[in-house]
Amino acid sequence: MTQTQRADALDQNPVLRITRTFDAKPERVYAAFTNPGDLEKWFGPDGVNCIVHDIDPRPGGAYSFTMRGENGEEHPLSGIFKEVIKNQKLVYTWVWETGTMAGIETRVTLDFKAVSDGTELTLTHELLASETAVEMHNVGWSGSFDCLAVELINQPH
Image (spheres, rainbow, N blue to C red):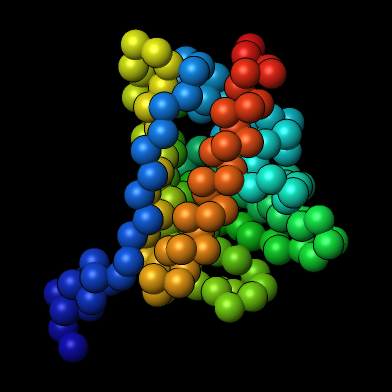
């Protein structure tokens, strides 16, 4: 297989794309993704808590979180920031340390766009291994965004 064919094969992996508008300025929504105190308040679907171990939002900087479910089950994940444009864009790798996707590196892109009523956030989660992985991450990201919307209302600063 040539390098071009491999790239084409990667491009055929399922992609999750979610666009959501939040009632907050891009600076606030961006901070919710890059400030550990903010992240721990909302990241994860309802019933899941996020424990931030490290976050260094700069190109080459790392992050590591543990997602803890209501049953106490823990799901650690980590990654490296590839592109950081303050208040506009974040691109980072995403690697679960346990479970069926353990060790598989995927890529998350978050685009923050100012709109009249707040921020249009587009999430693109690429290199997912299967449609099942897309569905699972859709549930997680959609639930997380529901929690973020509530957090932005409760803590608008």
